[in-house]
Structure formats: C-alpha cells, structure tokens
Image 1 (spheres, rainbow over the protein chains, first blue to last red):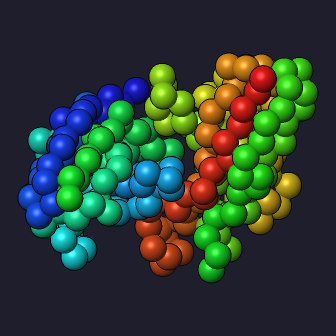
Image 2: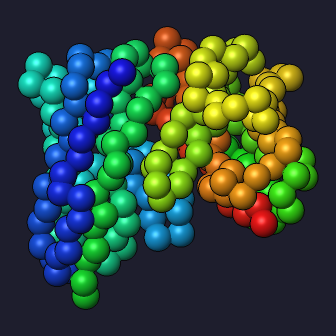
Length: 109
Length: 117
C-alpha cells in the first residue's frame, strides 16, 4: 500500500513565524488532502490538492505529483494554528485515504 | 448543513459489553468512512461505504467489529464484545463523488471517545 511520511514530526515556533510542513508519498496518487486536528480533537479539512497550488488566507499548499511530495505553508503563525497537521493520500478522488503520522505544531505567544 | 453528526461524544463501558456508535453523514454525500485514532497507531481506516454498500472492510480489526449503513443518512459501528484495547477515538467522515459537483475532500465528525474499562 501507499506509504506516507510527514516531516518534521514536531515543530515549535513563536507567534508570527512562518513554517513549511512536508508530506512524501510512495506512489502516484489522485487524492491528497491536508487536515488540521485542533487541540480539542476536531479534524478540519484544509485543502484537497492532488496537484498544483492553492491558497486560503495565511495557508497555502503545493503538490508536485511527479515528485511525490506536498508542502503546506503557514505564514504569520497564530496560537490558534497549534495542533497536528495531517497529510492523507489515496488512489482516486473519492476513495479511501491513508493518513500520515502528522506534524505537531506548537505556536508560542 | 450541520456537518457530519456522531453520537455519543463520549462512551464509557465495561469490558464485554456491546457498544454502538452512530453517524449521520452530510446530505448528498455518497461515501462514508469509519476511522479509529489511537496514540500508537494513528488514524486507521476501518471500513468505507459507497451508496450504502460496504466497499472495503479490510481495516476492521476482527469479527467483534461490524458496521452497517441501512440508508443514505445513517451508519452504525458496533463492537461486541468490547475489550480495553478498543479504547480510542472513532471518527466518521463523508464525501461526495466529484462528478456530483459538490466540494471535494472529506468532512469529519467530532468523533466518539470510547473508553472500555
């Protein structure tokens, strides 16, 4: 099956800093999603991005499908950005997706 | 839309008891997924349905686990008998076939935190 690796596993930053989270995957995929799990456990879909670049406010994501990686950028971090960020991939657009182990982000005030 | 609705939010039960978790997907979504999250194993897919039909149940840990989707607006995950190692957060998620023109990507419910003592 597909292997998904995320890095770094942990990241601690001061408020206002920028960050880049990486997701590597082992096979060609047609489904890649980024999620944020907040400190209360809620999983929020950030991006559906099997290829290309998308932006939503201070967050943006880029997937280079041919090189099997995706990047999530967070600019001007806020304490509310804290939590775990998951990358998840799948072979088709509405099939099952496999989650990586996540990057735990802590933003200090 | 109220999103994906799961109940109960918390469940504490004794070993050997039957546990039933419930999920109402977003209206119009034709895919429904059950995931389990633990510290040791992360987020694992247990089973998923398309148009109420189970498509892949290879993640169901053993025969003690069963899932049903009797109609498009309701699914259950049942554990009988429950064991302490079943303690985890169980998430339900739904999504739509991209051909239906709805936004892509999964929407997760708030989860059910199950503790088996």
